[in-house]
Image (cartoon, rainbow over all chains, first blue to last red):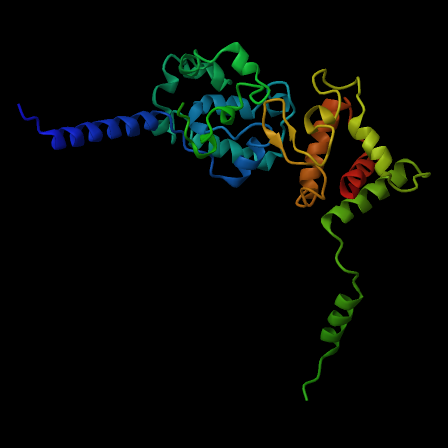
Length: 159
Length: 138
């Protein structure tokens, strides 16, 4: 029997390519474009994509900057207002909805979670990372996305 | 012949008599020196040696996980440091990172945060001046 190899190979390639594009699409979170937000939210850790948390979370976060996970991250009122507006406008349940995907599944929005790394989807996606890897001196913390996701700064969080 | 009026001449004279504009860094040091003099009339300039001591010694008054500047910035100001969350911090020495300390508001912001976290209190003008002198002279 003579199989039509060429169309078959072509078809499989197209399928594989689409799958790759779709898969990467699930792991894309548009990076911060506002220069003030990038500077102020990206000094100690990378400036996390606003689409990784719902608007309620960002509001809660901005209201407690003087105790930001134990650190003083306070800024002047004008800067805080600008950052808050940007984060809320591009959050997982507002302007950044297209990127958030399943990230908010199982998340109570009125609960305003503060840690991206405690979202059920984040935990699930990272369950294969061992404690030893987290302790690696180049990783240091779960906030250091770029240690493993080399293209995180551009928004890509593929494996 | 076109004649310059007195105002134009005055303006030119003013521009010529103004000393070469000091960099924002020098302006900051001048400001710290004035404040240090007020706080301590015996103030006699800043010292890079004292700045180095401040940068490297440990304090008990701040947060336990950041007892010293070098906890995050590393022992060599000419090398990059690392935040506790793992992000790299550009070298603090001006000779390596020439863009540093040009924005006074940014300098003050970080002194405010970091002095509180490391020393458990705001830094004095003397300490800020010593530290900045150390970083500019390295």
